[in-house]
Amino acid sequence: DAKTTQPPSMDCAEGRAANLPCNHSTISGNEYVYWYRQIHSQGPQYIIHGLKNNETNEMASLIITEDRKSSTLILPHATLRDTAVYYCIVRVLANDYKLSFGAGTTVTVRA
Amino acid sequence: NAGVTQTPKFQVLKTGQSMTLQCAQDMNHNSMYWYRQDPGMGLRLIYYSASEGTTDKGEVPNGYNVSRLNKREFSLRLESAAPSQTSVYFCASSENRLEAFFGQGTRLTVV
Image 1 (cartoon, each protein chain N blue to C red):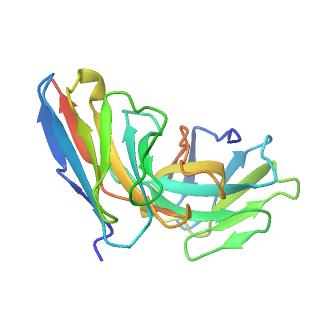
Image 2: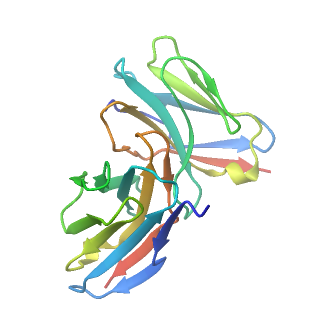
């Protein structure tokens, strides 16, 4: 699986958009970008995934650059409950079962 | 729906004792996983079961055994617990390697 690089931490103001970057410069053509988050002491929670196109669901938007070497997770209106560790993962959907969780980005939403 | 249920939630073992962590999912998912998370670190895959009747090693399988009892249940056994196995254990399930659903974790301390 391609390696990902995320900033270790970031702050965000409540009500503002949170933009979480992820670098995956060695991503291959059949690898998907996944985002999970882990709120303190809880199990990880799936957020969103994508291959090439931008994706949006009720939780977030995923913007993938045209060269696919980086992506941004956007939480449109951050709330205090969005404070968590966010993990960016790349994996081949077709033949890979494991999710490789790195250190992630600790996002703190401040009132 | 309960999702993924893990028991017990907390456990303290003495070195050399054995125990089994239980996991059950009610989403009819084919694949199930066991991860461990050490303080301040990301999750690491211990074992996974791609489908009922199959199990495979993940990144850190030493000291553990698993049983896929049926489609719903996937247990993790520590035959002779060691202090290095002090961790939070998460069970997860997924359908066709898509989004994974995690349980709330078992916090294990080996003294």
